[in-house]
Length: 257
Image (cartoon, rainbow, N blue to C red):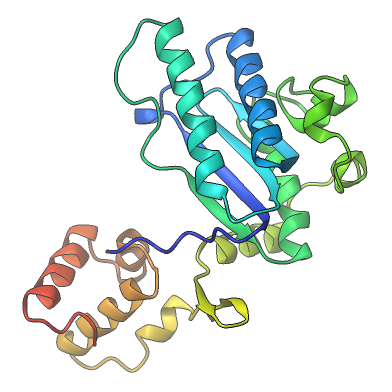
């Protein structure tokens, strides 16, 4: 299935990446510190702001505000510079990251509000921290301890956004919102960026009376951005079957139905 087009527009972005095979990418404090140094330098070069972050042992989350359409450039700079450091430090070869980085365009304040809490609660959900502001490598602690202050200097969210959520857990609505955003598609129009409506997965399979019709609806759901695993769970079939149906439709030339 083709990848969703990456949104490069200037604005707020949730940027994340994970170690290959889920391996740890931060093994000691100096690794965390080196990543932050690279992030700080890249922020100066590419003129973006860091509003929140959390560096977990095997992945990271960044909430960035870009001034130009240069998200891919700055992300590649961060990832490649840190991978070079890590491989040199630990005398290893090969890729450090599990595929290309992921990014999500933050298109409204509701998502922004939920995202800050989600990032800050990562170490709590992983049971390596007891509360916001206690994990050493999250924005709340770095700001509180006045470390890497240049990263957060003149930040619009700054302390007010992060500390306004101290003690507030993500509720069900927040988690549903984040899930919907991750599965949201966009299209370019003359005026700029337009969010495409995301159809509920169940809608594709209403009033289905044949396997052929079901399979066509599977192709539509795939085309609109749903994952094979999501469709498989909904229909109670395997991902392998969804993959087979996808290949079959491509072979007969009706994938664009």
